[in-house]
Image (cartoon, rainbow, N blue to C red; front, side, top):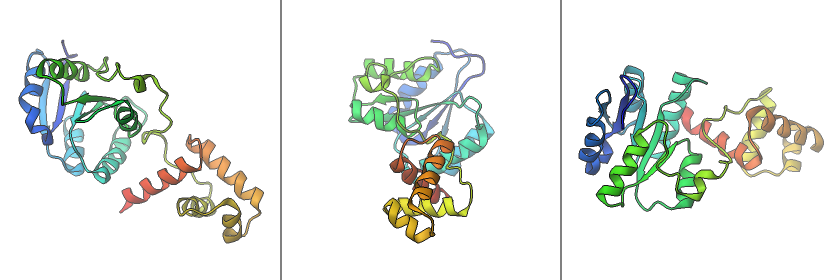
Length: 217
């Protein structure tokens, strides 16, 4: 396997038990370089800014750190091509892969595999044009939601209030009473927010709202 010229693999240091194997996969390339970073989102984000990687390998990273890191990457890369984001995990099955991919990762490597199989999976993961999880049925399923989707696009403060009420569990008729709009107007506003934001339903809207609130804290 060969990397494209001056490609870089960023490896979050929580994968210490597999560090040697990851390093050996990268060292066999003439142009690839391996850079280790800490597990905190601000440290990883700084590494992305200072030395934009071609591939980033992650082990366990706290979910709130991951949300904040994705927000940083959205600011860094916008609509341009992101690095390939790969999670190294244990107890991987199709359902887990599907859930991880919906969090914005591009690939998943099962670290319970034997060394030979793990080596092969890492090589596929580090290759920006390949997918180590392609054997999973979930890899071929359309992901219903991604954190790389655009943020919720509000037309005004009422939209923002409606999204918050949805996240709090209010029904549409209850929301209409709170914001002093008719039931149909509230439904129309929700439909417009979903369309503008590229979301499919109220559940995704509520989930995205909560993620954005967490990222702001």
